[in-house]
Each structure stands twice: as structure tokens, then as C-alpha cells.
Image (cartoon, rainbow, N blue to C red; front, side, top):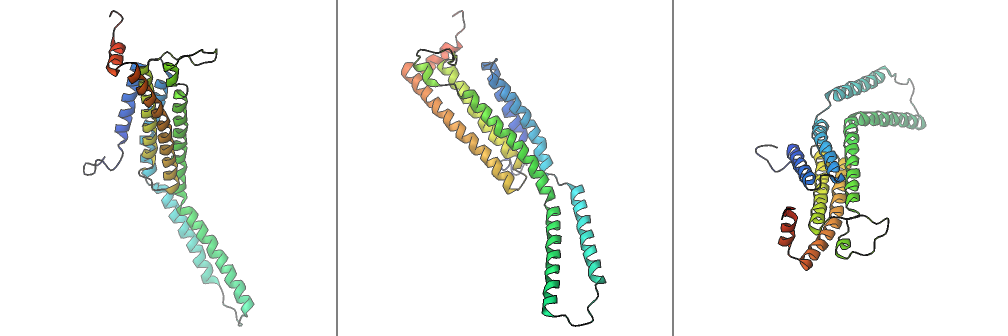
Length: 254
């Protein structure tokens, strides 16, 4: 980040450090959970995002030079063609003039389309890279949501007859609350990585795709927070939160 404007751009290094710390917190509390592996995957994507964002923002000078040469060649051929044209020796009628005008307009349209294609080629290449990375983040968001799908707080408060296919839930209220909270943090960081890819790339399609990932992460987090609120209500009805924390930190010898 710039020293003069430290809070106007996302710092890729800080995003990576935040995900790394979150991964350590998940591994320390749930060492054998697959959520920890998902966090490591997100960390790997965040490190790639740092390089990708720089690559997307960097001008492709070789492509720009090639585009300029091709455009100059097209203009040169067009100018040479105009200079070799011979004016008709007789006066042309209206129908012949319309035919010549139509042919000239068609040539101008084709030349303009070719020039437009060449000048937008760099943007389309960068857009394809950004959309591929953002699509990967969309998949990660759904994977995180899958990990909290069976974490139902009511199953802890109102345990009933379980079937053979029922999820085996061994977490306490406090542990489940922390697990769900980690999921919301992962979803939030997923949206930040999506924004990181396009913060230096002013393309409407890529920006819209990144916004969709952020909206998806926010919507999934909202569902998880509803579960967390239910857990807080359950914990408040059963016993004080401080008592739950003390029991979780109590050693076997106690």
C-alpha cells in the first residue's frame, strides 16, 4: 500500500497474513477438521492472487506494440489503395455512386472492427485470467458452505432419536460457535481475494463477477450468523458463557 494513501487499496500481503493466522487458529482448535485444509487451499489461492493482480495490472507491451504495427499496416495499405485509384473518365450516375459509397462504408466498418478487436485484445486476455481466478473463488465459497451445512445448533439443544445416516455431532455449544465463526471469516476473506484480483483492473465484466462472489459470500455468511445467534440463545438459556469457556479450558486432571 502507498504511504500517502494506506487505506484506499487492499494489501495483498496483509490478506495473506490474515488467512495464515486464521488457518493456525482453526488447526489449533480443530486439528483434524477438513475446514483447516480448506483454509490452506484458500491461503494458496491468496498467494497466487497477489501475483495475478500484479500481472493483470501490468501493461502487455509486446501485445501493444504488435497491435500498433498491425494498425499502421492496415492504415498504410488503405492509404496506398486510395492513392492508386483512378477517377472515372465519365460522369457516374446516382446508382453507381450509391454502390461505390456502400462498398466504401463496408470497408470502413471492417477496418474499424479489426482495429477495435486489436485494441481490446489485451483487455479480453486479462479479463479471461481474472474470471478464471474468480470462478475458483466461487467454488471455494460453496465448499465452505458445505462444511457448515450439517452444523445444526438445534441438534445440540434438542437431541432426539438419531438414525444411521444422521450426522455425528460431538461439538459443544462453544466449539460449534467457533467453527461457524471460522466459516464466516473464511467467506469474508474469499470475497476480499476476489476484490484483490480486480482492484487495479477497471473492467466492468470482471468487476461484476468479483461483486457476485462478494455478494455470494455475504449471503452465505448471513445464514451462518443465524445459526450463531441461535447458539448464543441456547448457551444463554442453559448456562453463562463464562462457565462454558471455563469448562472448555479445564484440563483432564481437574
